Every structure is written in structure tokens, then in C-alpha cells.
Image (cartoon, rainbow, N blue to C red; front, side, top):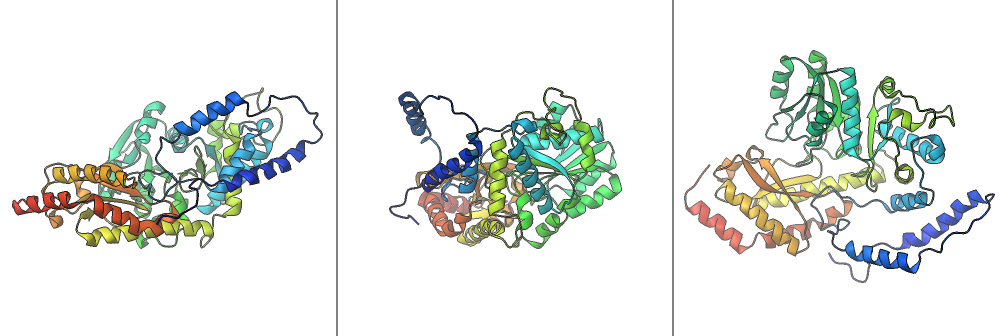
Length: 470
């Protein structure tokens, strides 16, 4: 899969940036010039060269052989738009800190709201998914003060942390063998009362599982809680046309949540940090109301700082998101949705290879583009050890994966002849979120076969000959 004579880091956009700066500068032609220090100075360049060398100590997150964490390279349009805005460095708090970028943020967020089916909404960008979820749960606490917030035990750990910051009670709900919230456990807890908000995760961090929204919404009808959808990772898949039927049904009901978090810096092709919180009912804006006569005096229009907990926020993030969505509209059967479908196709293709390869035991087929698996072995402990070994060997072949400690119920141990000597297993995890991953599945599989080498096969054979079963 190697391409000769092509640099890994794209450089053509640098030429485009110079032309864009000329266009921007024409808008300030009436201003008198002033003397500035020459840039970059020799000292500045020396420091930046040092920084460039330090940055080599990173994984190649942009490369298809990086499949470890949720790291997707920003689109060139997003990089350019962000860099262009940084020559002004707008602050999307008050309008006089970023008039144009605030308008672009409102337009971009409205497009995300329309993507999930909302014609009216209240929302804005945040520094990331953690802050976006904090605002959603803060509103939940204001609507239902003192009541408990529930999320599955596979929900992101920040929900427990956030509720601690907010001083709200939090409880975890068990998951089923697919990593989705257990409806039986959820209803059992709801029957005891005192629940204000249920968090449905639309794409868990570990496995990409999507909580069953139709059934959760049916429970809401009976028990009257507020529903927050943490779709930080999976939200954009509402546009994908190749999801499994039961997953599609959940996305079809996403618009019925009370609040939704989506992270443009994940599948939205944006630089870090760029999260988004949207509320179905614009009336929740009353909870944000505050006075700031020294900030909001320049206009009677809505200042974004009036509907957000964060104050100073990067206007450049809004410019980058606006430009990307202008180039790649958020619509079904468009270029952007095809990227999502390519990522899911890659995960399904790798799952098929693992399912028939004999070296690994997979969990259920991936709902989005995250895949988890464990090496075949005699016991869970041995499988965990082999996972760490494969992880290290794959990295030596430039395939960078992740490890996840998961409940053993996610895997069919009995069918694989693996004895359960632990309740959790160290699994290998790939996040195939780059469209290019679809063309690299064969290479990824080749490296995995090499990494699960003869020594690993020997351990498996020896363990099974010892007669141990689940």
C-alpha cells in the first residue's frame, strides 16, 4: 500500500493560504498601517524548528495504519479556514469579539441541528465533548433538580465526573452482551423513582455500541425522565446509509432526545477542540440568563456567550466548521456521508476477516466503525496476555491499535473454547474512522496475521490440548 515519491504531509494548502490572506487583507484597506516586528525572526524560526522536531514523537495519526484512538485528521479546508481566522483570532463570546465568526457558528450549528431533524433549537460550539455534555447535564439538573442521572457502564467516564462537579447524584446501569444499556436493568432502576435524566450513548468509546433509543423512548413515556443523547462519536452516522436495521432505528429516533452532543472534531473533520451541544427546546436558554453590561453592550442581537457556560471560545473553530460544511454539506448520499459509509465498510470487512481467520475471537459485528477482538487462547488471562503481545508487535510493523479492558460477556467464550478465569479481558481495538481505511483492510489484516505469529499459535494449541474448556 506504499505510495512512492509522495510526501506524507500535504503542503499545497500553504500556497493557497497566502492567496486567502490577500483576500482577507483587502477588507481592511481603510486602516492605517503600523510597524510590526519581522516574522519569523531567526529566534522564532529556531524555536519552531525545535518544535517541529519534538512533534516527531507522535503516532502518525493521519495515516491509515493508525487505527488506535478516535483521531481523525481535519479536512484541508478546515485547516486552512482555521489558520486564516487565526490572523484575526476572533473570540465567539460577545459579538464585538467575533461578529463574522459568531454568525458562522450559528449557521454551522443550525446545520447540525437540521441534520438530526430539528427546525428549531438552542445550541453552540464548545471546547469539546466533555464541556458539551456538562452543559447538557447541567440543564438536566436545572429542569429536574436533585434527581439522579443514569448512564450505562460503557458510557464515557466523564458523565460520572461531570455529575460530581455539578453536585448531582449519578448511577451506572449494566450493559448487555452487545455493550448497549440493559433495558431490563434500566427499567428496574426507573421503577424505584428519583431519576431526572437518562444518558443514551450513541457510539460508546470502547466498542461503538449504540444504545436502543426506541426502547428508551418508550420507557420515557412511562417514567417521565429527560433524555440526553451523548452522540459525541456517533452522531454524524445519522447520515450513513449502510447501518444495520436496529442501529438505523435508533438514529431515526435521535431527534426525540431532549439534548444531543456531537463532536465535530471526531467525525466532523475538524481540528481539536470542537464540540457541539444542541437542545430541542430553545426555552432552556432561560437557565443561561445572566447580566454582563461590560460585554454584551455592542448589539441587541444574541451574543453566543449568553447561551453558553464557557466564556472565551475560539472563533476559528466556527470558521473551520462552517467552511467544511459549506464544502461538504451534511446530507444523505453526499460526499460527507459516503466517507462515513466507507469507515463502516472498513470495519465490517475487517470483522469478516477476523471471524473466519481462526486467530481471533470477535464481539458482535460493529455498529459503527469501531471493532474489538481478542486472540484465541485457552483462558481469558492468556488471551489478555496475547492481546498485549499483538499490540506491541503490530506497532513494530507501524500498525497502531488500542487496548480496551472489556467484560468477557462481550465475547462468545464457550463457542471459542476459552476458559473464563477472569470477568474482564484485555481486548484489541481498532477505530477505522478514516475513509482510506477501507482500502487498507488487507494490509491491516496482513500485519495482524504476522503479529499473531507462530509463538502465539503454539500457545493456543498447547492450551487447547490441555483440555481446558469454559
